[in-house]
Amino acid sequence: MSKKQHYTLTVNGTEEEVLAEPRELLIYTLRERLNITGPHIGCETSHCGACTVTIDGKSVKSCTMFVAQADGKEITTIEGLGGPDALHPLQQAFKEHHGLQCGYCTPGMITRAAKLLEENPNPTEEEIRFGMSGNICRCTGYQNIVKSIQAAAAEMNASKEAAE
Amino acid sequence: MIPAAFQYYRPKDMAGVLAILAEHGDDARVMAGGHSLIPMMKLRMAEVPHLIDLQEVGGLSGISIDDRITIGAMTTQAELIDNDALAQAAPILREAALQIADPQIRYMGTVGGNLANGDPGNDMPGLMQCLNATFTVVGPDGERSLAARDFYEAAYMTGREDNEVLTAISFARPQGGHAYEKQKRKIGDYATAAAAVQITKSDGSCAGASIAMTNLSDTPVFSEAAGAALAGTSVDTSAVKAAVAAMLADIDPVEDNRGPIAFKRHVAGVILARAIERAWSRA
Image (cartoon, rainbow over all chains, first blue to last red; front, top):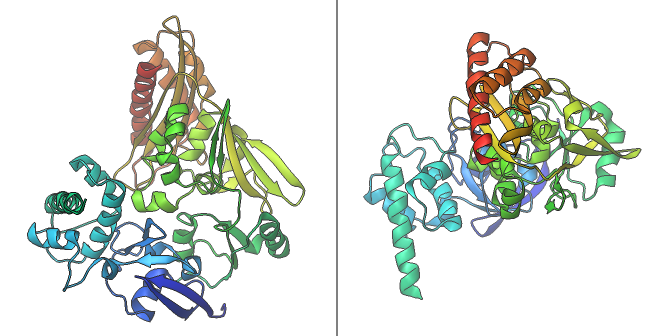
């Protein structure tokens, strides 16, 4: 067995030090050591996207990264986007447009969608479906997820224009 | 899913990588984006006592475009897709990369990892055979070059020695029309069959064609005969038929959860015919 090592991760702007074996999957470090339980474990085989987080500007499935690889990285989870007191426009839009039913896939969906809208603030429906194709939802049939992302994009663009 | 324990290394240069490979031999393995290796380690189908993460080794990523195009092995699929100059110079790469895995995986998965892994399901090996690419590997005795068309020996067996690292891929700027056509069951799946085609046209007839197939044997299949069947023709129905027949003589698919052999051969024919048609329309 390899020894535990100290790793430093910046999660949602807070620097965290963890002691873990290098083989620990990042999703477990987040959930079980740091109590950041927004990212979920769905398939644990890189398919479903429920564990999606943003690492140094990339959407990453945190079940497919060892904690050792994430040492020194900046990580954003759903908790870093918004919370009950101040919802992110995507969270608000998912709520208003019924973008979720059971909610299990939602943190990964929204974390991925936030990155997608950062890269492409005006996506077409096709671009949304393609850009979200690494996230699986078993409830909604995706229609309302697409609608929610479209609504959030419109809202974010409108408030950006208002600020200018 | 808990992989077997390993020692983790993150060297800052290639000398550091080669020293660890020299010290630990078969027990050490390099990792690029990890999106082929980590799933195998989680399933304990791969055990890597000494894991060398290449993320901080300089000089392994980036794309340079001249008469030849050179791509650093650590260039991610997402970087490849986002490179507009590359999409101009060699559009088949973006077309293929967009059909690999899903967005999250393309941020991490690298061209070099896809090529060096040796999984017959990977898309880049067939594509690089179509482009007649050259791979640069570096080892204790320095650099050497290997032809993509000679690189793949069997599933997960390649011309790269265990103490060597793939550092770059280069190929002549492709000419004519291109297509990468892939049949898969769902986003993120490997191909049931995929075809990479480049065709050049001269005075209305085919001046030359290069054709390679993916996931239809234990290695990618460069079908010289399929390309030859198109050369000199007007790429009409009978020429496409002849190219498909030549390709079918070169592939050797096995039955698995993507279907029985007869189905895979059928899909391979449909996919190649579509790829030829699309490449020809762009030539």
